[in-house]
Structures are given as structure tokens and as C-alpha cells.
Length: 640
Image 1 (cartoon, helix red, strand yellow):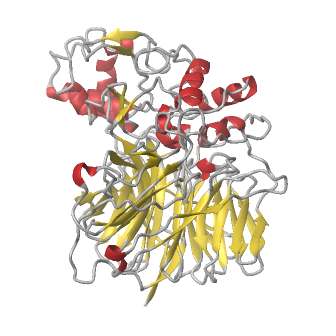
Image 2: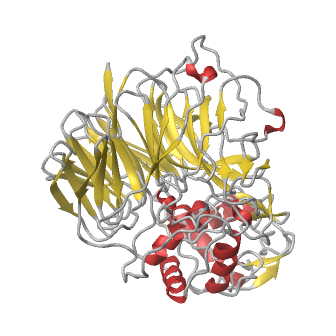
Image 3: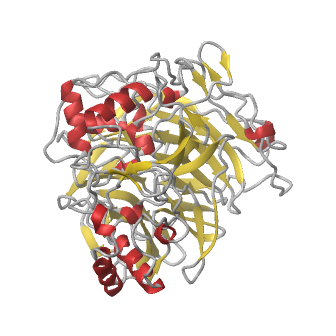
């Protein structure tokens, strides 16, 4: 039995669990998966990128999202979405030639792609316009364009019902008939949905920042949720991509983020705190009890410093069964692991890591094995660095999506220049997709690791935030979002101690992330790109009447919200003490519903918490408001 999966084709050869049906616990063996010299470190001795000459674009390219490639049922044809150029390409993998280009509307920003194996159609989520586009796979002819939601993200075709499911970052989960027509299911699940997955447990969706998998019942309710198990001393965050296999396994690439104390005054503190250039990462396998204290025994700092911490954000490749048990996991030196694909024989995966771009000493794509039911206990999978992609000028390219062709060759989609790379035993074949350059230095600086195996986008994925609360110098600090919040809101950081973006970049990028000092052109390009990150859209499910009532309350002087949250970004840019533990910047409220938890320490896991357990007498005059008033205020904030 074989079944088509989003972007890949696999045989029914993978095991869903151990041979005896048990679910063993984890330990973390002292077994490295990368050789010394491939990691990053602090102390100013990391792996700085070699950025090309500075160039800026008037129309800024969008943040990297990844996962924009689908290889068809027989492995001979691929469809690639290009969010930078608002286009879709069809490529014959046998002749290695571009067959068609489908130009889209400016700002459509095509994202996830899935083939409908029954009718040779391809469905593309248009992240910018909120539509689902359906095209003929082999001609590119547009069959249908249907509005879905404000922020479509994941897309999958369900063969049993011939429905196309779309998951939205604004919380909607929508199902359409494959060949056209209105939605047959439209459920509101929760914000931050990402990929749609199907296995023997039915329908599931992933959550982007919390890195959870949510199982969805037939009525659209969440029946249970689970996350990959993170290594000791880290938490699971930012699941960039998840794909399923016919044997009931889910393969996910996500981030593991530090729970330890982070020293911000140490050079390279975000990359291990001065441990040196070499970091060896490790694996977990299902073989016995957890390691005492949950330590990562396989971490070794450069210069033979045992126990040296890894970067504060690491990439993790995880295998889960359909019951939610983490069967295997490995850390590897992939910055921004945005996509993963499985080979047709079901034995290997390929992973794209565009954050490793421009750094000759580390790879930008990786391959790894998929353990079988007998190897969960007896062996560990090697996540191997494979290499870099180079254009005709010798410049690195950012791999943003991966797949496998009919011969199980890795197919990689490069962002700039737009091309497909087919990695064959005799060498790579390159299929150019577009001659339009979308290279922007600000975009490059933001997405490329600075020197200590961490990029700006590691904590600000897709220009937003990771939802994580860090321990910075002993103080809990939630990552702020950059979506529409930067221009005109200086000073920056929660204490307001960064007077402008230049000071912030010198502190964070150059010092904490171990990056080389940015020259004036690079600094200007970075500022220009970050300031243009668009604000996120509001969800479709907000009660307009309640939001209007909440807006009126918000701007009533007696309530006190607008006294501090004023102006276009809803902030007065002041540092104030409102009884939450110190003096902190008044945050912009643009997109506030997208970035829970709220407040500097992440106290409010929901907007309602802000008015409940996290409220203080100095934080607005809400004591006289009714429960309905508070609810209306929260509804208004959801619209911002």
C-alpha cells in the first residue's frame, strides 16, 4: 500500500512503535551527531557569515517561512511556490526543465503546496491574500481561487474525502472540495495553527510557536494535544514543519530553546557564553529512563570544555508516533530548520536550514535516517551536514524547501536566485526558476546566523516572536514581536535601555550573537527591513459589536488604557512602573492577539489573564468594569 503525502511519496515501511508495542522512556546518550568544528560558540571565535555586497529593495521580501515545494505522486514533477516573487513554478524533474510560471497578484505570498493525487491538481495557500489557489499540476492553469481566512498557513489533501484542509494562523481550520466550491467545514480552533497532518488517528494540526500537535475531532474540537520531548534544560518551541508517514509517524523539525540562565553581558552569550567555536550536539533515543536531572551529556564546548551549553536556540529533528510519544530526537547545527521531507523508501529525511547561509564552515541542508522499530533502542541516527548551494557567482543560496524525486535524489528549492537543485550522485543539477533578484541585505542579516549559530529569526520567526520567556541575567523576559511594532517606537527592549536600532544591533547582533560589527550600509539595510515587517491581520471570528464596545471602553479616559497606549502603534514609548515588578516600556499593541504570553515576564498566557490574575491597580482603572466590559475589551484587543 502506498499513499501520497504533502510534498512527498512514501512506502508503508516505517514502524509506528517498538516491536513489543511498548513506549520506552528517553535517556540522552553521550553520542554526538556532528563532528567538532561544525557548531557555533562564543568568545568571538564563532563562524561569522560572509555577506555579499549590500543591496536594498524598495519592496521588501517577506520573512522566510519555508516548506514551499511539493514533489508529485510519481516523483517526476515538482511545483514550487515563490513568496518573494509572487509566482508558482512547475518543473519537470526528468528533463530538469522549467515547464511553466504562474504569475500571481502582488502580495499573494504563496506558501505551502500540496498535490491532489486523484485529479492532478495542486493547491497553494496564499499567505498574503488569504486565498486557496488551485491549479492544474502540469499546465499551471488556474482552476479555482477561494477565500479562506486572513492568514492561511498549512494545507493538506485528504484522499478519503477528497477535501483540501487549510490551517490558519488566525485560528481557522477550513475544508474545501478539491475541485472547487464553497467550504464544507469552517471551524475556529485557536490562534497560531501551522501544518495539517493526517495519520491513523485522523486529523491533526500543528501550532507554530508552542510546537504542539492538536488532534481534532469530527466536530472541530481539540480532543488532545502533545509536543515533542525537548532535551534537558530546553523547551520545545517553533515547529517550523511537520509531515506524516503512512505508518503513523510524524516527522517534525522545530527549535529547542534554553531554560537556563543567560548572561547578556558575555561576548557570544547567546551562543554558549564564551565556550569556543566548536559545539557537538547530541541525540535522544528510546532506551531506558531519563538521564538524571535532564542534562545534555553529549554537549561539549570547543577546546575540550565538557558540559558547555549549546546556543540558546538549537534545531531539533523529532520522530513521534500517532499517540504522541517521542520515539527519537536529535539536535543538530541547523539554524532555522524550515522544512523536512522523507524519501520514497522511507529511510531518510532531508532538512533545509537557510540560517546557515553564507557560512562556509557549516551546512545549509542536512540528511538523517528514520529509525525502524528495531533501531529505536539499538542505534542513534546521524544528522549529517550535506553542504551549501552556490550560484554561478559563487554566492550561497538559502534552501527554503526540500523533497525527493523518483530516484530518491534530494530536491532543494533555493530562495535567491530562485532555483531548484537536484542532488544526484554525479553532482547537482540546477533548474533556474526566475531571473528576478530579491536579494536584500537587511533580510539576509536577519535570517543568517551571526556567528554563534543563532539568527535574529531564531527568536523572531517570520518576523514575529517565539512565545518564549527567557531567563536573561536572572530576569524573566518574553521575546517581543517585531510585526508592525518597530518603526517609531524607540527605545527598545523591556527596560527601554536600547535607544535606537543601531544600539540594539550592536548589543544583540554583534555582542550577544557573536556577529561581526555591521557596517553603515548593512545597519541601514537591517533597520529598513525590520521596520517594514507588516502588522499581522485580525482573525475572522471576532464579534464586531463586542469589539466596538471594547474600543469605546479602551479610549475612555476613566478606564485609562489610551493614556499610555496611544498613537498609531498604541504606545507612548515611555518606560513606566505599573506594579508588575519594575519599570518597563509600554509595548505597542499592534498585533497583540498574535503574541501571547503577554507582559514582560509572560504572566498573561491569554488576553483575559491580563485583566485577571496579572492585573495591577496601576495598570488601568478596570475595577469598576463588569465581566462583559472586560470581555469586550479583550475582543477589541484581538482585532489590533
